[in-house]
Amino acid sequence: MPFAIRHEPGARRFVADIEGQAAYITYRERDGLVLELDHTYVPKALRGGGMASALTAHALDYARERGYRVVPSCPFVAAYLQRHPEYRALRV
Image 1 (cartoon, rainbow, N blue to C red):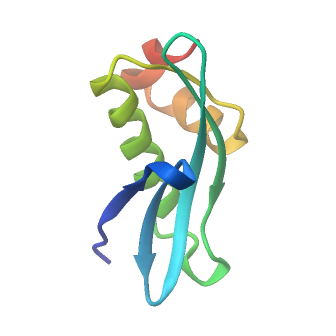
Image 2 (cartoon, rainbow, N blue to C red):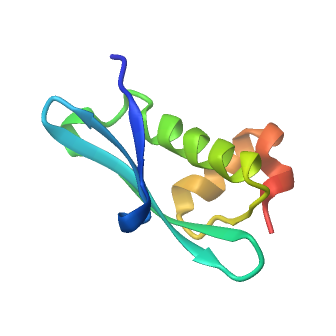
Image 3 (cartoon, rainbow, N blue to C red):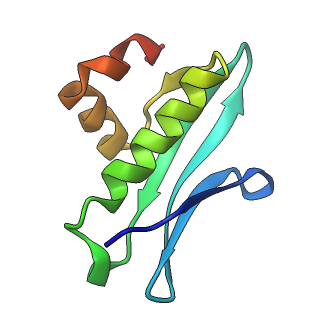
């Protein structure tokens, strides 16, 4: 199921709306160009379809494009970084 991800800077999150439900990954900006990716949420009915991975990749691409480093305090993000070596250099 295709979906678009949008950035909501005021809410400090990236969001995808599907079937009237929102999935998101939240972050905090820390000193020195560091993003702490602190929470990933996908509604129960939408889990298992790759949304959390897509949101995480989007957030990591955003960080890379802007020269941020990443603190993965969300367990899902930490596990994603272990599975995807192309993003490991972003980790603080």
